[in-house]
Each structure stands twice: as structure tokens, then as C-alpha cells.
Image 1 (cartoon, one colour):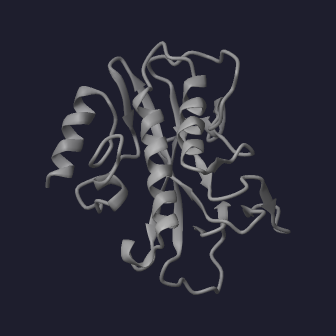
Image 2: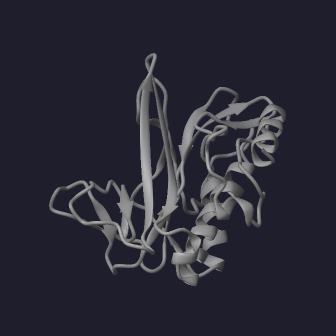
Image 3: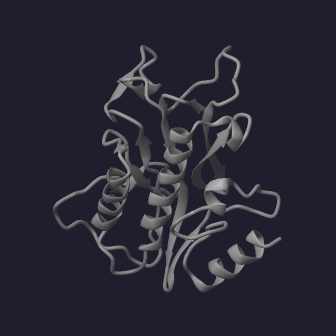
Amino acid sequence: TSVNEVICHGIPDDRQLQEGDIVNIDITVYLDGYHGDCSEMFCVGGKDAIDEKGIKLLQTTYDCWVKSMELVKPGVNYNVIGKTIEDYIKAEGFSTVRNFCGHGIGSVFHTAPNIFHYTVNQDLQEMQVGHVYTIEPMICEGFADPYMWQDDWTATTADGGRSAQFEHTLLVTEDGVEALTGKIETSPLQFWEEESAIRKGIWLGTSENARARAEELSNR
């Protein structure tokens, strides 16, 4: 659990959550020999408890993430992911963390390819059917350089500004991409999904099956 200025790898402690906190919950699963990795943001007290800049941070982080995932399909160069994310968030006045990246995932938790959430001015590998990896941008209000705690695990913003993150494990399909860690019938519809400038409603991927399932869940 990463609260407010914690970029990632937050460890729960005895601090009680307060109204207005933004919290990232990162969940990993190991099932039948394969790993899954995902994270979601939550607002303590709901949207009404969050200030306008916090709302903008959450919405921008979600929208840059969805915009990058919308581009995933066979034959696309992996460098489009980071450029799409950085271009989108910089225009809104935010910054993207460069010290952590998304990653290939499967029977091994961290494997190739590395998924950069910032512009890389060179060609990388091309996406192919069957590739499985995470996209998980960490977007900050101010400086994105992390400050590492003495536990050598928890990373926070150096200036105390808040950070937000979303993550899916993704599968490249013949007709696009599907989220292997997508929402289900009991998942709440969050304000950033309802108000997205990129695609409103729950996002499950761009394949025909994913679009149909997302529409069903969003309209339930």
C-alpha cells in the first residue's frame, strides 16, 4: 500500500488513514505456475474528500495509462508507450518516474521486455502476439526522483508531492490487447473511469471480446 507521497513499495504501518489520502494498492498473484501483477488507486473518503489537484493527478494518471494501452497491438514498437505517457502528463504539469518500469511477466515475475514510462528516443522491440507484460506508470505532482527509505524498499517523492499509479498485466492478441488483471462484476466503477477523456467506463482491452465485456460491466 502506497499512500500519498509514496511512489511504490509502501509497507503498511501504524499510521491511520485520513480523509483525503490517496492510496495505491498493488497486488500480485501466483497461480498454476504464473504470476499476475496489478494496482489500483483508492480515495479515502471518496472523491469529495480529495482536493482539485489530487483529482487532476488521479485522472491524468489513469488517462495516460489507458491512452498508452489503447496503442498496444502486434507490430507496434514498445517505445510508443513511454512517449505517449510522458507527452500526456507533461502537458498537464506532472512528471513521470524513470527509476521504475513495467516488465515482462509469466512464469518469472520480472523478465524482458522492460516497459519505460518516459520517452526513449530509439527503436525498441516490437510487440508480438503472446507477449505478456505490465504497464504501470507512476506519475508525480512535483519532482519524480525517488527518495529511498532506510528499509531499502519504500520509495517516496523527494519533495513530498503526491504520486499515483495504475497497473495491469496485459496480453497482446491478434486484434489488440487484453487485461489479464481486469475488473469483474463486483468491482466498483471509479470516477476516473466515468470521467475519462480517453475511454469512459471500465477498460479491459481493445480486442473485440474485451470491448464487449467492458461495455457489459460498465453498464451493469
